[in-house]
Image (tube, rainbow, N blue to C red; front, top):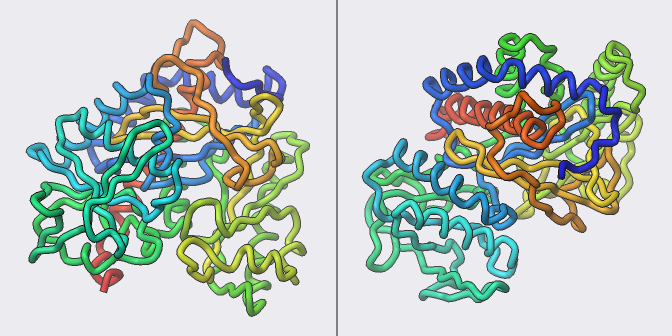
Length: 431
């Protein structure tokens, strides 16, 4: 079933979904043209928020770590899409080296790695796993809860290539977001494909750049199907002079929050929306839901207490936060078993390959769900997110999921644009 949408069934989102259905041919033609001009990322996932009056992406991950949450029924879609991605990037590839995060004790993440390896092996690739951990000095086998195993091996560098003992790969697939920077072993590889490219890591990437790219993509797409781009696009601002520990930059942050909230209130009045507007302040680089706070008034970011400052000051790998993005908050009105939920859509190449709901029993509809206590539930559909059924209602499962898939692919396209536009700075950024 589709999780219960608590807004009225005659609400604006149904009108938006109907617009997607009526424009499906134009949408797919437009998408095809875009992918002729832009190289899709190898894979990605995006968090969506469905407010009943707005359906928008709020986060885009280029190193997705939740393949274990996809139902096995999606395996054929994943394999087909991975095959297309490999043929596009390195059609003669036979050996692939996968470099994961250093989470040897995170069983959920390791199950994600195992699922990813299984997908890639079904494309005909010989896949082995190389670890960046210094204490992995010999092949090390890890037991997984489902009885499967993973073998991590020490990386070896020779001239311009990286591999393992007795294993010289054609390509290197990163499932490590490089938050702490690019290790020396990965610098200067000139004879192998590295996917995603190194500059897609969080040492270079900024959420605000992605938001800017998405803004352009959403506006062009909105013109194609005749909608207000705000319906699919969270507004945003940036503050690049913040130091939470030293209490500097609060005025910049407050000014950006106030400006954004003022614009959102105007849009709410335009559409007759009675909900309370809010924004989400997030570290401009980083993942795992760290460095995130919800704000409903600019006064809330002035004089933060010690606990709030500590929460916002540091993200993954202990990196200090000095740049934040202020993003329009999008309520989620979807629930599963009375708990607040949001869809997470997974893509490989330019295909939607599946998804699941992130569910949190202790969070509200205007809060970040990517937090301790969350759990995941598969999206309940039998086919992919690209097969709408015009004979059914706009909120019928294939049609709601088609809307999810459209917006997710827009976020993926924006990520492609973002990677292309930051590529010239790669050499300088990696020095």
